[in-house]
View 1 (cartoon, rainbow over the protein chains, first blue to last red):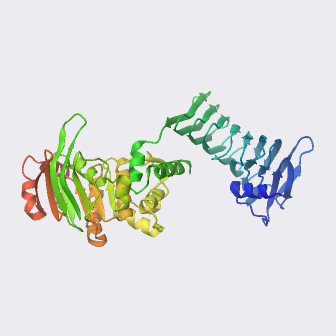
View 2 (tube, chains in turn cyan, yellow):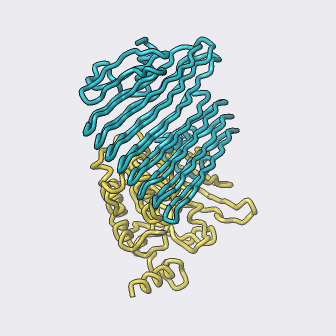
View 3 (cartoon, each protein chain N blue to C red):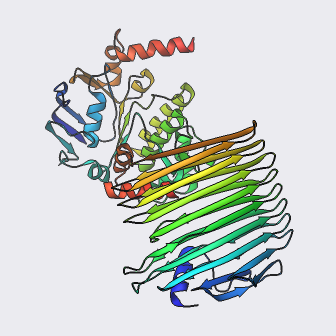
Length: 305
Length: 244
């Protein structure tokens, strides 16, 4: 792998070259390193770019790294990764993407990830996105995540995009069977003239299925953000969607959480709050010895932590 | 030592709130400023912290004229302030807020536990919690007080610390103020009507209609402060009624 990939990996994951478990490092549309483990097998797809990651039933405590890096302009990477998680497995999947361009040309990564969780399995899915480099070339990341949660399975998704990505459109959809749970924590920071759109659609089809989606976002300068979430309750289930945004300067945030209950015992809640940093918050931190700028940075750091 | 010289302040509408207040507080004293509601107590406290700028007068901290210094600079010189109505921070944990309060000093969990224990909170339950609407009014108030304890500055100002705190916690708060005063040795200024806080004061300052009514040792001032019709007297009646 090249030095830019190494730099990006250091920012989006805690991956170490001597890692003994399963991993696949994608670099500019190619493979810069791969390893399977006894319980986690990684193989190329035969019909399109991408890989299948098969996690054996009962695998517990393993981590698999699937990061992708774009290291120069004129790359428009499209990849399809499918994760098959066996019954009662309990694993961590670290994905994430770094896009770098300094040559004036656009760089883009579009990862389409599908997750198939069998009964009783649990996945913690960590995904961090960044853009780096100089010049006028645009940095885009457009992830698509499709989740199929089997009976009593759990996917905990932690996603973060806090700098350098000029444009991103994230589409996440999930279908939950009986007792399945989807937990999403999203953190998003846009500045300058960046644009970020996040769309969630969750169908709660099974008895006692649940979804909890919490998005925290900061929009600065002239950046724009759009947030939508649809939680559809088709059974006795519970769903919660929360979008909190701090807005500054001339930025704009459009938040539209939506609930659709198709069953009388579907308990669905949504919250959305958009506002600037309160003057009282700045003042409190100034009484702790911070300048106004330091206070603002701390408030944003805490909000997105 | 904090010294106020001829401090006056009026609202933008022209209502005089403070009128030529002169006050000197020596190092290491626990001073309670009391008086009727609307008498200017909170405004005076905020002027000392730099949150409100006086129309006229001078403020000296250890001989340095700090009148023109802003909140940040005063905080860096050792002035801290606990707000009567604390603000909430979504996403910020109690641990983060206390660590920010301590500045460059890295606080261990044991130290954080000790600080929270001072205000009647169990650290293991609270350190990871958000300083947000997930906490009750009483909890957020105690964390506000804890943030000032964590700073450990030479001058700590508490604006009506008893407001919003239940009686059990209030009793612990009294102990906390005693402990801060006796062990940490800083100067404490407490704005309060509460008799039990008045009783732990070294000195009591009575502020009424924006003027310094009287000041002196607590034992000499108590009778006057608790006279019928005073705010402290009203508080005492409320507390007696509650206990009955």
